Length: 453
Image (cartoon, rainbow, N blue to C red; front, side):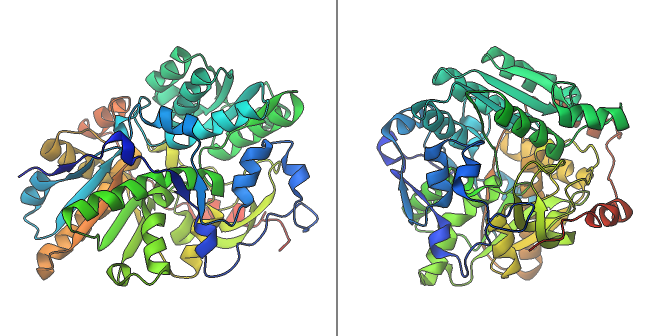
């Protein structure tokens, strides 16, 4: 029997959940190059005041503006579905559920933050937005949000993804955004990188450098970030908050939560509201496991170090305490472009350091194997990023099969893969490859970590 729990428009959350109120220890502050905490006024060169207020707030619940909820209603609440056919295919006693975020206009979870960021910039008087994007899901989401609130958007898209995913680029252009392949000759950061390596494939760190540089040098321009920082993960908690209501309607509660993790917004959005139950002593969450799933070729949590590092490749951003592979590490060109980031959310990093969450790294070919299996069972073709969460869920379901445990497994299906079919084509042709953990490259990059903190 197919189970699909759909809430109505009145059940869209009225507040976002801020996990800063429940962290086991204070979040280490962002630092400047001198090792001193960065003052809010310096951050105003990058972000508008309303965004910074959310970023630094310690209030547990942050109201969602009515204007944002009205836009959310274009696709929210998103459905919670039981993957009964996948369960049967695997022969597992586990119950597998997924939250399907691919119903948004951009086809992913990213508009959950793009919409409030565009709105808050608009009311703050911002004239123009600039950002980076890896796989293109964030860039297309901000292009949509900018169009809805009348803000021009420029997107620095990682070059390898710009070439691999032309339809994501066309989505951004359809919504009015200016999209350029990063690194570019438009910024000092880009020119310096291209002078050293003309064929540089780009990375999220480089694209962030270019976007931040433009934000601080072009009047009226502010930077919008698609992951990593608190305000982004805050906005994404609509996913988990809705999922909690949906599980309540079923009389169930997850035993294990899985979500892909690059910068952390996908994972935080799904897991943080359930971790709130654990922090509150809710008996249902006593043994809850939350697992961040990352690529084996860019294993930030599982193979990185917990240290202060820049969020970009050039050193324009403040230093953040996080798990990192080194800010100038160049990840291999895997198709899950949204997971090719050298660092991780400071909040996710702290939770992992405190052993309150888990992390696992999975190889590329196995993730596509899982994605195809899911598509053939459930009908939805998942994005390469989402395939990571599916892979880990399937592995857990097979462990349940071996042990006979009827666990409730929940994963965030963060987006569809309709614009990633070239990656599936490579998989079916046997051309997709696994990239080994680049130990030497990571060690070389870690040697350049800032000596602060």
